[in-house]
Amino acid sequence: MYSQKPYPFLPLELIHYIIDFIPLAGDKAKIAYEPSHSITKTLLALTRTSRTIYPAARKLLYTHCLYIDSPWRIQRLLISLLAYIDDPGGSHPLPSLESEPSAIQHETSLYLSPFPEDTIDDFSTAQAVYGLLTILAPTLHRLVIDIPLRSLYPEDDGLGIRRILRDGFAQLTSLEMFCSARDELFLNCSAEWPIDRSEENVWSLWPNLKTLALYNCDLDSEKFWRDIGKMKKLETLVLTRADSMRDFDFKTEWNRGGNQHQSLTVWFVDVDGGHGIPETVEEPKEGDKVRIKVECVPTSYYGDEDVIELCQDWVKRSVLREWSVF
Image 1: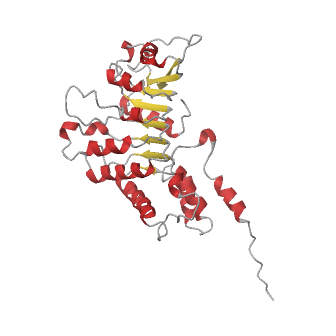
Image 2 (image 1 turned 45 degrees about the vertical axis):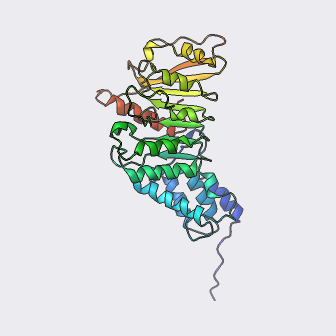
Image 3 (image 1 turned 90 degrees about the vertical axis):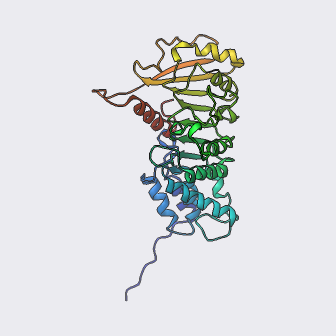
């Protein structure tokens, strides 16, 4: 008579140990894995496999795979988080309060590019961004954004979209790393010209920030030097295609702000020969607190790429790989 043998049994602790090794570690890790990545797909599949392994898989999914690249994705994520907050014991994808620690506490890294096409003139998406950042503000430590903030200037902002976004980003006081791929986090709301200098750069409101990457900053701006001088924990500053870079001695300006005892590594990024690259870079002297470095973005043999897009995409890819270059 045929006797069916039981399936081999693995202890739950061993299964969890295996799941913990699904996301890559070290230099190969990403800040956020895109939805099409095999790691995201594997973790998502595991959340649908068994109730016993769901909490472990969900934790890793929310920790490593918050890659928000469309209005649909940010709306769905926001709905799930709000459902958890409003009804922790309800029937939705997030665990109950008895689960320790909660899902919200694992959401420390985020890639955010939620606006459709090439404009921020979308009121519902702006509101979703505000809602998401409000929820994640206490735990979010690393944020990379690709948002066309200069697609809608204050004088054309009849719906107050820029104010909504500014108020959302201003809450992120737990951030330690931030990258704005497209601009200097242009969130001015005043339509006055010249730009209202009393409006602080939002990144200067984040007291724990250690790494800051911005595109096309104007180093001739008094406002930039005023606000960068407030960053008492800043360790790494990445300036891609900065304007007026060759008109200023960064070390002198940094020390003038009273930061002469604070160590800082500054990366200037552009294509070879671009306006964002210093003509000469001096070797650091003994006692120098500011170290100047240069990164030339590779170009093709024909050199027919759009330099702006080339530099923006290169920095974004580098940052998402957890600063494998900087």
